[in-house]
Amino acid sequence: MRQQETEYDFVTLWHVVRLLAGRDLEMRCKHSQIPGQLPWEKDWGRHWKAVDMCCSYLSSWPESQLKHWRRLVDSYLIGTALPPLSLTPTELLDIVCKEETNTFGLYPKLTGPLYMIDQPVPRGDSYGLGLYPRAARFNHSCLPNVSHKPDEQGRMVYTTAREIRAGEEALITYFDLTKFTTLEERQEHVQVHFRFTCDCVRCTEESAEENLLNIESLPFGIF
Image 1: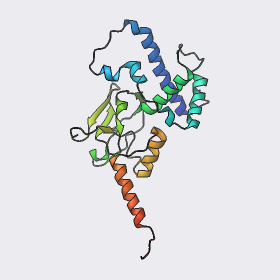
Image 2: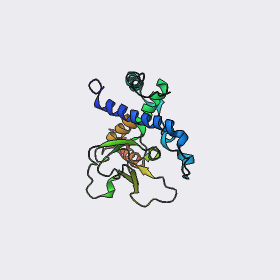
Image 3: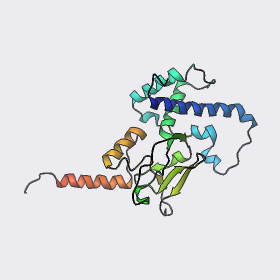
Image 4: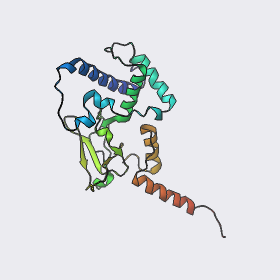
């Protein structure tokens, strides 16, 4: 596959296969497991149940992208040396979409708001990726109040970047804010990679400022 497809596609399916392998192992061992008693398990789930609860946003992806992923599913996940999956091609496509929209890249430096440090630096190159279902519930903001970074055990650690008021939503950024600085860059990035339009406080304010400047520059002349 690595010789025939892009590196991005290879990494995506590699991660999907790891998720499916975990599902297969869980199904084989489910009768010997002791049910968890953690208080959050009812709402969040664990293991494959948590993955299954993630949103795929299947209807938001362009048909050209879905067609490409269907081809990858048919070529590399159907009728291969993988364990019997008991999943249909449509269900496998849904899992690919979930992987694409809920996976976190692992970076050596902090991913968070620019105001946390005097001289913001890029978070560095990704050295891995992982799907953290509960963490995927965080919404995005280009002015987040929570930062995140993996620890030495691969756990994603979330830290408040400032005092969060009672009732205020905890928000993270989905990407490196040092690389996408303008309103146009950020909007294009979230639309292409996360399938939504960002309407956070920062984007709303910057959009209003741009609209005002555009209005002021119109050649209305003298009335």
